[in-house]
Figure 1 (tube, one colour):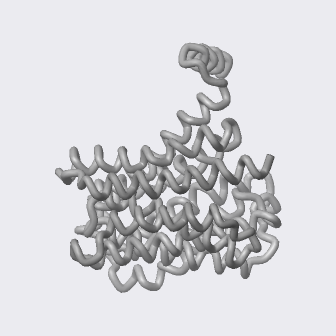
Figure 2 (cartoon, one colour; figure 1 turned 180 degrees about the horizontal axis):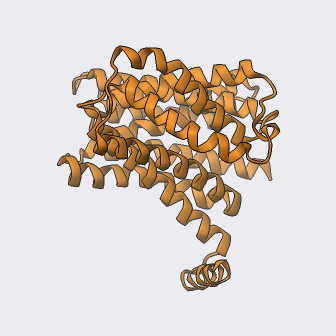
Figure 3 (cartoon, one colour; figure 1 turned 45 degrees about the horizontal axis):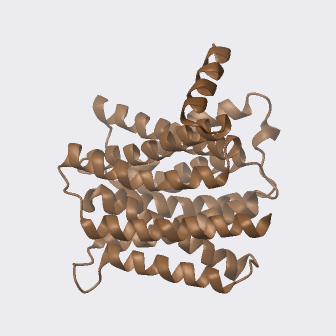
Amino acid sequence: MFGSLEKFTQGMAARVGVEPGNFVGVCLALISGLAIMANGAIGKLLAPDLHPFLITFFRSAVMTLILFPWFARNGYDRIRPTRHREQFLNGLIFTLAIVGWFWALPRTPLDMVAAIGFTSQLYAIIGAMLFLGEKPRLWRWIALFVGFIGAMIIVRPGFIELTPGILVLLATAILFSTNRLVIKVIATKDNPETSVVWMAFWATVLTAPLAVLYWKIPDLMQFLFIVSISLLTIISHYSLAWALKLGDIGAIEPTTFMRLVWGVILGYFIFHDIPDFFTLFGGLIVFSSIIYIARRERQEGN
């Protein structure tokens, strides 16, 4: 079966004139982006009936039940963290980010959710320069400034109301970027699988007491939605991980912008959200600055 799949992908790659690894990587990255935005769409559907603490708790619990035995089947050492304290800190930051994300979803159109999400990478770049010792080169600051302009076009302070949903999304973007930086530090000691498992575990533990305050047993449809967002999160993470492993970063990164496209499509057909020109335009500017920084980093790294 895998031999037939390999021949198919090689044939498709030859037809479109790209390297097979990049072709498969781009396809996986597109799947990852679609999974993220489908996750958001389902979260919006769940939000009117389940509190964000409950959604985060059930989602994380299902992920833990799936991932922990799966990775530990060959022995606990595979997911044993070097320092539990660092994994706890990472889990705390991730939990705050994901609770805020689920809270903001029903209050913000999906296209804006995706566009504001792009700013997380800008914050991560700033954090890497401030805290991880990466050189603050002039071209980086110029690209970051352009990205900031794009972010201002998206939220347009003074022209549109900065709703609680938008403000919380901006905060979660900073938290997700902090989470990314902590993972980068942890990755020097623990493998990525360890971080994924312990993020899900700590999110379950940390939200459990809060979930009790809003406790409600999901009905069958809600339970299926919760299982779906758990599986979509796993698919998204590992699709992107394999995409980066198989393809070149320069080929994979441009697919990130498809999240905004997926958000527009899902938002329109499921929630009847009309895409906003300034959200799309600002998202394009932020995306372009990220791509420029990534390509420049790659050139200087060669």
